[in-house]
Image (cartoon, rainbow, N blue to C red):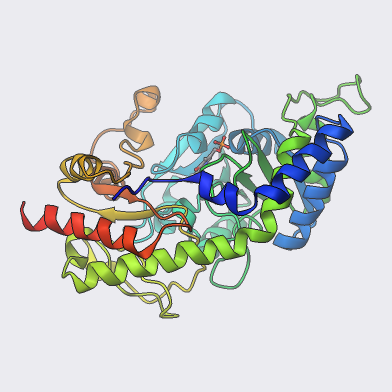
Length: 393
Ligand SMILES: *Cc1c(COP(=O)(O)O)cnc(C)c1O
């Protein structure tokens, strides 16, 4: 049996007529960049996410970069980020000659550990970028509380978490000052190329984001500020508009798959070995947990986790990955090296051992196929192969 890590063709087939018609209609308008199609999509997101302003941009990375540019981050400013995330979260900070300041992860959720934030705040700190990694909300209450107390801005990296919900019912990305999303094809809501979105409830920020999205001219060709080309294509907005109404159903599919994985791992007696257990208070979804620090597991999470990734944690991770690949099962290591150990950040002076939780996560995590169209048989096959590997090693 073949189980790819992701198969977008199945999703395309399921909405092909709708999508093709929308692409042709967009071609007929010959309106390529921003314009009515993008505005329509932006309005749909305001309704969907419950926020005042949504601004379509060229990618998730550009959404983060533009967010930092919109709050006027200056060289030498410090931005607090988790050390364990996709590269863009920290890369955008350095691109503005600001300094990413790293914080270790929560051992259960992989997200930034709020307990590590406050000690990193200096008079140069401007903002915190929590990431809702793998589709699960970061713990936003303490983060917002710290930010308020120290007068810092909060920019949420929701690239993997569009439609995920934090415990109080707010959509991830709408809790802080600015939320950033990605429409990269492998995200839960992907377009046909690169695309992204910023959201905010702050009128002034929305205004400056829109101005800086197109080089900073206001009016056109008159520049008080410097922006860039962060524009979104009409065709990408058309794709997203067609897909958005299906997102809820797809998220439910991912959650159902996650639940089946976790149940099968527990039944196979593997839950400790792959770092999975049952602890979601709503008793609906079984969430991956840390293998090495079970005492940290509490009943605090009632988030709506949308499983952009389903991550297990295993000791012989590379061997298991090879074994699964040899059995036609797709899997991937996200992310093998935390920021503080990346070569490009060597001048920041961190060393191995500075953030033990993230380092352990980087050494042991493995993402399994979780896309909504997976069949139960495919999931059973994956668990069976993992079981074979673990019991023979
Ligand atoms: C994908 C991703 C980004 C960047 O999005 P792109 O659209 O690929 O530029 C940023 N942060 C996180 C956490 C991501 O997963």
